[in-house]
Image (cartoon, protein in one colour):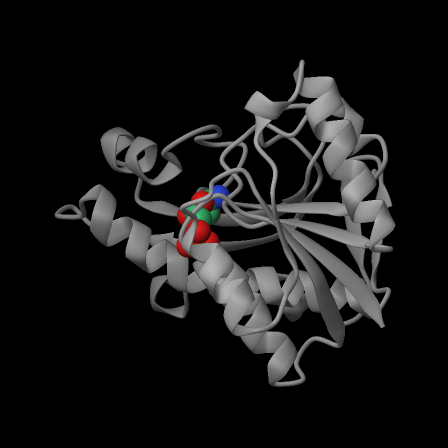
Length: 214
Ligand code: GRF
């Protein structure tokens, strides 16, 4: 069974969605470790509720970013982690971790990449007044939200949307496509060829659009 390690900094609703999809049997995998950089993260409570081992690892305990991420990589390897999930980990993951887990680190971003990378993807979309935004699950590479894209889901952006209302609409989709991407990975259905992520099976499963837009 696939072993998963999760990195999260905050409330952990994506982390919870993954736990729920494992518990329901949708994903056949086991989360063996939660690592957080934030002792106050609600994700810690979620892990405790489900008997998932936790570590609080903060950059201030390390000389530089390389040794911080090398340490995280070692903790994950010690637990035989095969897939790393960035579930609202509010830091740019650096080389020392990426190199150890190339195409084995998935991130969720609250916009349709390559639009609106970096922080506050939902606010950027509202400020730009695009008509469609969404979320993206992608493999992490050395850049900021630049890695190969696995699944995207689109949602409408309405004239009266605020950052909050759009975030809520996008979050519902995040909770669907992140578990879906992990399921595909756990079933060995994902191949990466450069930027191209090839998914075995039904095409409809890999792109989700909002039916009300069609
Ligand atoms: C989500 O919006 C995700 O897209 C972004 O950070 C947020 C994390 O939310 N990367 P949560 O902690 O999973 O509730």
